[in-house]
Length: 256
Image (cartoon, rainbow, N blue to C red):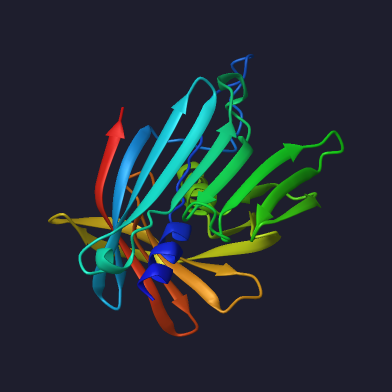
C-alpha cells in the first residue's frame, strides 16, 4: 500500500512551464507556453491522512534545454518498508529563438528500482509528416506509437496546465495527450472555481480544477496558486469515490 502510494504520488507531480516573447519584427504574438524561473519544490505525501513521504522537484532551463527532475523519498514508518527512491526525468528542447512555440519533448525516464519491470524510457521524435513517433519500453517490452496529436510525458501534465493559466487566467478547460506505459491517453481538466488555501501561515487564492483521464475511474483535484505561477498548493487523487493520495506543497524556492 505504502509503496503504491509513493509510486502514485510520483506520477502526480508534474509542473513544467514555458516563456512568452515577441517576434523578430517586434510584433506581439500569442505565446504557446509559459515558463517560470528555475525552481525547487517539495511536497508532503499523505496516505490515509498519514505522512508517508516527500516529493522533491527541480526545474532547470538553460541553453535551450528544459530539464525537470523528481524524486520520491519515504519518511517515518514508511521508510521501514520502502527503500526505493523512484525518480522521473523529462528533457525538452526549447531554443530561445523559438520561445513563442511549444517545447519539443525529447525523452522521459522513470526508474523505480534497478531492473524493475515498471521502469520506463521513452523517446519523442517529430517526423517530417507532422506526426510524433513515441518509442519506449515497459515491463521489459519495447513499443512504438505514432500520433497526430501533440504528446507529452505524464510528468508534464500539471506543468502544461500551469502554463495555460499563466497565459490565460480565464481559461475554463483544455485537454492533453500523455504517453505512458505503451499507450497514449487523453487527460481533460475543468475549472471548478476559486478557493482560498492556508499555506505557511498565509491564505492564498487558488483555482480548483478537476483532472480526468479518459476511460478511467481515477481522477484528481488540484488547487493552483494564483500568486505562485499556478503551481499546485495541494493535489488529491481519487479512485472512484475513495481518496487515494494527497500531496501538499511545503517548500518552493525560485531561482530568479
